[in-house]
Length: 157
Image (cartoon, rainbow, N blue to C red; front, top):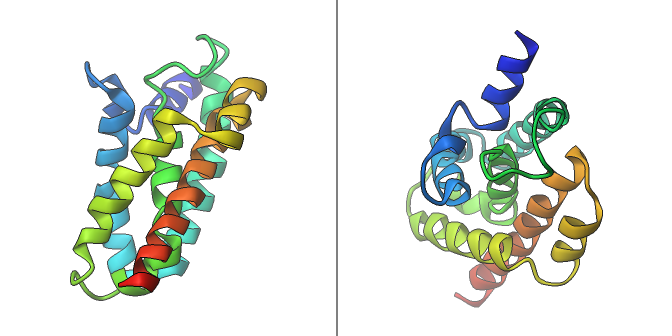
């Protein structure tokens, strides 16, 4: 039972088993949660959701790693967490309004870029921390970097 629940959480209820680009699909599927949370609760909702996802994700990924190699592509809860973090610094524009809808598109693109290319510290964490925390942490860093990019765009425009 614990194994099934762990796989359900780690794969975002099966989204990680999408046959092509599971990480991208998992990031996209995360918007089912992110958009309504950002709209109704803003930063506090995104923060609470990311903390709960982090705790459940850490426990689930730790269990799943007993049955797989390090960071298999079907684990996408890390994408959900990172994608959520991406919208922290622009959450004020997303709460109660869809006028900043383009931030969702830009945030998705930035997050996928940093998650795939893994520049600097993101890549180091991905290569060096070979446990459940490492699986999730590189995506959190990609989300922080993406959030900073969105914030800069918000300041400029």
